[in-house]
Structures are given as C-alpha cells and as structure tokens.
Amino acid sequence: MLNRFVKKRVNYILTMLLLVIFICLTGCGSKQIQNIYSESSNWAYLETNEDDKIADVFFICPTVYGGDDSTFNMSLDNEKTKESFLGAINMEKGIYDEECRFFAPYYRQAALNVYEMQIADREQYLKIAYEDIKAAFEYYMAHYNEGHPIVLAGFSQGADLCIRLLKDCFAEDDTNKLLVACYAIGWSITEDELQEYSHLKFAQGETDVGVIISFNSEAENITNSLMIPEGTKTLAINPLNWKTDGTVADKSQNPGACFTDYSGNIVEEIPQLTGAYIDENRGALKITDVSPKDYPPVLSIFDEGIYHLYDYQFFYRNLQQNVAVRVDAYQKK
Image (cartoon, rainbow, N blue to C red):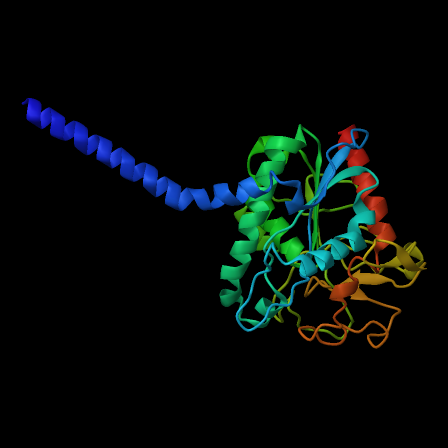
C-alpha cells in the first residue's frame, strides 16, 4: 500500500515537472519578448514623463525594412534599419502627439518582400511582427498606461497590426473602455470582421469614440490594389468630411496636405491640395484634383494611381485636428 502511494506521489511530481517544462518551452517565448520591452532601447519612443498630456498614443510603425532572399523580418539588432524605422515614425508623429504621450516600440516587422507573396504565405512573418507588438502593448499596459485614454495608431503594416491588436487585446471591457480611437490608415477592415468581433466599431462621424478610422487613397480609375483586391470591399471614412458614404468632399475642406522628412519637419504644406470621395463599391477613398504622375507610388508593389504612401500626407491637418477632437469628445463622454 505504501509503495503504491509512493509511486503515485512520484508520478504526480514527475507529471508536474513535465508540465512546468512544457510551459517554459511554449510560454517563455512571449515572456522573453515581453521582457525586452522593459529596456528603453527597445522603444523608439517612450514618453513616460509628460504628465500634462491627456491621453497616450500607442503607435505602430509602417514597413521600412526591405528584406532579402533569406530574410523576411527585421532584426532588432539592425541599427541602420532602426534609423529608418524612427524616421518613418517621425513623419507621422506630429499628427498625434500634441494631445498625447507617445509610445512606439521597435518590432520585428515583416519586410517589404513579404508583400510580394500570396496572402497565406505572408502570415507566418506577420505573426512574428504581431508577437512583438502584443508583448510591447501588454508591457505598456502593465507598466505605463495607468488608466490613460489610448489612441491606437498605425499606417500600412502598422495599421494591419493595430487591427489585430484591437481584435486580440481590446475585447476586455477594462481595456476597450480606454480606447479613444484606432487610426488604422492604409489597411482594410471589413464588415465581416466587425460582425466576427463584436467589440469592434467603425467610425460614423467626426466625434465618435472607441472606433476605427481607416481609408485607402487611390485614383479614380483604380480597381485593384494590395490593400483592396478587386472584387472586395473595405470600410472607409472620408477624412475631409468624416462621412462614410459617397458624398464628395471638395478640396476646400482640406486645410493642409503636409509632406514631412525623417525628423518630422514639414518641408512642404499645400492647403486645398485635393478633394476626395468614397467609392461605395470598393470602399476606397478616391482622390480628385491631383495627377498620379505627380504622386508616383515609388514602391514596385504598387501601380501608378495607388496613393498609399500619401494616405496621411494628403490629409495631415485633417487627421491632426481630428485626433484633438476625438480626445476632447472622449474626455467629455
């Protein structure tokens, strides 16, 4: 009887040891990643001391790393790419930081060459990028947020990862109630996704809070793009009139397109550069008053007339003003 009891006890201990080993092997990956965000060097911006700011921005950088034949995610040890990473953030930072403390982690973003792959093949590399973003956000929430309202913001790949973060980490009411808005500029969000994730809400106007703001700019003749493949439809809001239908906004409603450098300086500002309206079949934001030849796509993954790189530049002042409006609306609510 005693031997049987001893055997059971030994088996129990062995089982628990194996369980601990399993947890370490499967769970320590995210723990290890999360721990790196305790180091300030793994943040492009970590503004923890600006106590006068009303809200926080958690910003996710767009794609700056090109990759090569054998590399498909940016290394956090690549100092040259991190310089470009910081520069890309600076180009947009001025839209968001007047009202907010600014937090932006370095992360193992998927390289540009990933976007030349089929959608299914991209996912393994985007999962690596998202793993870092989730770990950084969890560390931010645990150590820095302290109940501040949150503006979630990103462009292109950053917008994709913003939406993933919304789906994953904002389902809990305690986090979701902190959301001022998610500016997921330059990526798609569909009605099906809103139905699948009931806590997601798309913006319907200029002042609603806890919502997603998204649009993809293109010329009137475009019918297919990386962000909106032909035959699909995304949700969109027009940053000139803050409508979600096909109402045309005249260029007089555009107070300033701003073109910035890697230091965040506005090197050129053009008031009333362009008007826009939403194509109600594609959900794309159709841009008027400018020529595709004057604003080329630059990257080979985009055709002429796809204004992806100008999504925030064309509407810089509109977006800047709207962040202030929504933070104020959140405070009043």
